[in-house]
Length: 344
Image (cartoon, rainbow, N blue to C red; front, side, top):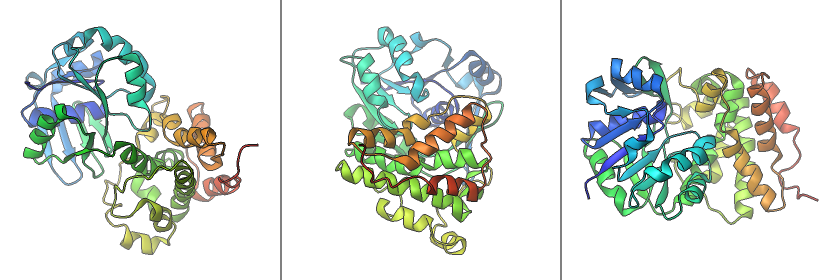
């Protein structure tokens, strides 16, 4: 089968992946909002990363559409919309898709594939993880500020795409243990809320011990909840998940040495949640910290640290502070009751 890809929701992530797909020689079309499509037509797409790599396509070299009917011939549909938009986008896509088209959900958090399947009965749907941060630098220009390779839930239709990307030096991997992978990634993404509330770039935030201790509290709570649910998160960093809170809690001088690779990020890179707050958009906190809270609830437990982070981010969405000091945020989270407290 000839691989024809449609990237639905070509924002920062979708544009970054689209450039890489075209660089790998794949037949790819980006489906974007009119203003992004106009930007691409006028300026093309340029992608750089924190290691100095660059990819570039002129406007005439980037197939782009503003309507979902451009996905009609696609054999792979990469769904790059926000978590909250999965239902509506899947509904709109349903009459456009080939019955053998594989839909790949690229959202952070837990449950996007399940939500898409509910709207696309009979359609094959899998998940993927985009581990890196992508920022828009200007017209047609995007930048990958952190490390990581694309992770796909194993499916035979994805092999040609993975092989084409790998042949161009673009890191990808097919994984059979995708539930474990999603929870392993979510443990790391719990920092999105801390970063968004700090108002700082990722590197500056992670360089402060008290902000890291905030993340450690959220991770310990999540790990306890996962253990109660008999879910073993995948190891996605050189450090096993159970040791991440310990590493995060060490003094700054020790952390700079022990976690040098974790700090190998652009000084100005921020989490996508921080970008959403800055632009006045709804965040994905309900699908990250909120996923821990919901899992705990189903187990008859509480997750007060992640629930508090969720509440603070929602308050920031409504105009509340997203410039917390490390000490103040840590005090807020440390005052939460034990995550092991069962719900009465």
